[in-house]
Image (cartoon, rainbow, N blue to C red):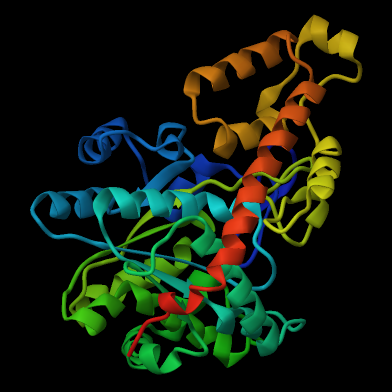
Length: 378
């Protein structure tokens, strides 16, 4: 979808492009999703014992049928998790946000995860990338997933090109029931859109239903993902029950902003993104060059305070690097009052980021020895 915001900058949110200042309340209205209410959070907390920071801070802010999945769970019907990655480059911190939450859900609910590497999609939509590129990135991106702590006994990575024999029959069942007019309206396909791209949403739908094929057990799927992927699940939900499956449920997260003046973190703007392979000196340079809500001089900031709401550095603490809500509030208030300067926050974030990345990169190396254990055996 596209719209204009108060900054006269177009907001674009599609499965292939996100730019401009994102109005999440408008996305809820335009996409027809539901806000995550306090009552729904209480239901999650009752089951999990404690709310994850991404829920408490409304980083996950919208859903489809999360309440239905929780009600079924209460009655003894489990669910499976499904999310994925379009392997067109290295992983950055923004990609990790929903994966970290997915791991939390997996542990708390004791459920399987099907993780789809959409290497075929990236080949079809990007003229600059070939199948050898997507194969390489699929492998590299899978290492990042495993490094977060997912276990092979309940985590199954699907590589679309390699595993197409596993996917194709269900994809055909899906494709047969979605008309071109529906796909065109949902995705904005043009006359010059290649026919592979037009068919591809049927493949994206398959992991919603694959658990039954593999185990014989018909369970609903819950998809934690950024809201730009919502159009895929809308068309999938329309045909799910016709095929004898549950409608896939979703829980949508916000985008981690980039280190520039606006917009989500994007691999196409490497200087505004922190990648999992970045070295300490690169992290330091990017953070020290980041856009903040500070004032031109330290004296002015100490006098009038800064604006954390537009500060990319504060967002890193908010999204990932400060789990303690009280400490986060202290930082927020000190920033507004001018009691802390941008340089202090940048220095602390560099330290936390580099500690996180050092541990992540070590785990990533170890993941090379076990990656094959995550492939679906058949």
